[in-house]
Length: 300
Image (cartoon, rainbow, N blue to C red; front, top):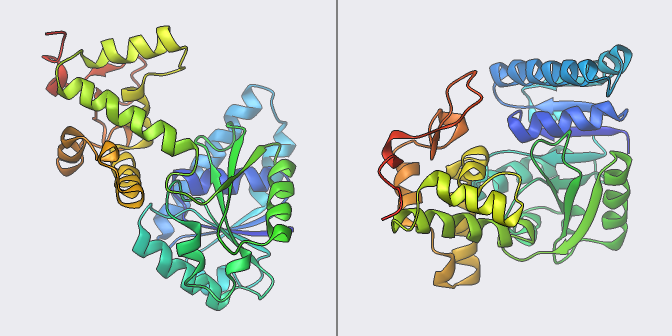
């Protein structure tokens, strides 16, 4: 497989496109917004510049990577020659099902259709296509060019051949693929999101403040960042969407999202992407400041 199409030019999409292009794949990045595509190319350029500055790649490597990426605002033409399509759109079931119907209708018969979903059923997505044996999950971690893990999720009908090809493709990106089965949240988010949700419950009940909770998990459990900071980084809207998938899919109230999380998303406090979540993310500020709403959430 050498011709790759990535659907969605957001954080995950541009990271996936960057990574495939860096390893010599011809990548078409597709988004309905030309502005989003322009921003994605600018982000990829900046990330490559950082890699050059760190001597992780050469200037020639950077130029080759950029040359390997083309863009399109037309899904049909964008997937017409693809051997692998990786969908990285918003974590919304209805949107993903529509996209996969469109990809299936326009991609070559032998093309493998992958989704970067972090929680939605691969089997459900595959069911709207005419090729369920060729639908698979490729759950990359953020930031994609840096993080080694790729969760490879088999749907009910995903073939051994397709799984093997995607495992090998992931290895060709210098990633470590881990095969898992199709259950709500897979492995990563079935474990991670309830922990984040419990941290939010702990804050909401006044057990400890934002910094205290994050400090306990960083220093006591050797996590590189605390769960509330990580939630801000992921996006509180994404955390909420995944918790709802877990709650609906597993039918257990232990997966019910904390009301504080629901309220913050409703209020538009989404973390880094909105400038405020549990922390204030002022542009250019290295030291995080606990958001105003949580200054009174110290130990009680």
